[in-house]
Amino acid sequence: MRIAYLDCFSGISGDMFLGALLDVGVPSTLLEHTVSALGLGAHLETSRVDRSGISAIKVDVISPDASARTAVRHSRAHPHHHISHETPGAAPPARDLKEIREIIAKAAIAELAKRNALAMFEKLAAAESKIHNVPVERVHFHEVGAVDSIVDMVCAAVGREALAADELICSPLNVGGGTITCSHGSFPVPAPATIELLKGVPAYSSGIAEELVTPTGAAIVGCLASRFGGFPRMKIESAGYGAGAHDWPGHPNVLRMVLGEPLAELGKAGEEAVMVLECNLDDLSPQVFGYVMDRLFEAGALDVFATPVQMKKNRPATLLSVLARPEDAARLAELIFAETTTLGVRRREERRQVLSRQFVAVSTRFGEVRIKIASLNGTTTSYGAEYEDCRRIAREQRVPLKIVIEEAVQEYLRSTKTK
Image 1 (tube, rainbow, N blue to C red):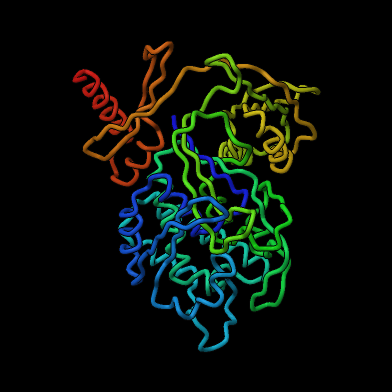
Image 2: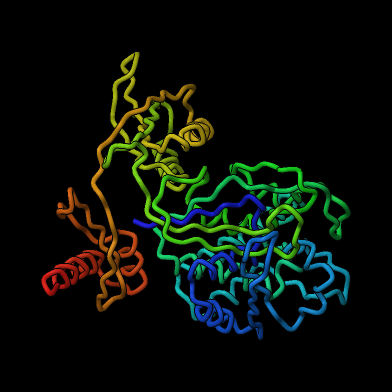
């Protein structure tokens, strides 16, 4: 298994994320091909720069409207997006969500990357819609809808897949401070859209009077990060640094990305601590219960399951059980309170023995599928095709799921016999 950790001690923006991807080993040709596939007449320029003694990669998107945005772009990484009351003749031109969907849909990139990039823009549109009290489809993206921001988000989605990391974990976000100026006037940092995008995300300010987290950066981590927390126990493989626009004395303006293999939470090999969260539900709709399970998995739960129980007054009910990492327990408990009718959540710490796991990729006639392999003391005990890979291929190519799974397993067995 492989994990990636984003250390946002100096915030995050789109160009910083792309720089970190490149510095950690994502091929520059992949991002260049992605930009070309968008058909917007843009290209990337990368350079190695120094940020308070740290060597990092700076990424700039060069596009036809770059000169019109130069004055406002370098306030951080991107200025802000607004609703549709732009002054006639202003540059760059506004784009609505429908147009951006069309641009991304036509691009020759992987379907999962398309979905993630679209999700970022939809989160941005939803945030602006709420702030300005207008329908989502009336939200127009000005600077954020410009070429460089479309490129940032699509390249971020493509680069995330190229990491081949099973999980992307993000640190709490240093949002900065001070004020920013946009077409609506001066606002305290974080900007209103950024605040909306960061709901449920741990954030803090180190006191730097700058905008450290942009709406673009908030949308990227909001869609691509599987969970937020401190630096995980891991065997470090590599690290990369993406540079922001400014070079502040005494504070490296970089985003750090670290790749490696996760280690057990406890010192004993193969053993880790988990938190068990439980509550009894006797008045929750089964439809809502299914939704809650999905939300918990999306928020980083290790497992979620239901058990039929009989409560007081002979009422049938459901016992909701959630397995979580210790650092995620409080956040998941808050989600349970928000999404269910329970008045209390029981919590206890337990230990579990886990087999060592790794992934290998096999090529089938339908596409590449990951095989999860479990082992004990170096001996393989079980293996299986990764369900999400098979499900995606089955839906995209309209073939039975069981056929994709069977072929992936057979290809894995053939590959082991030839070794």
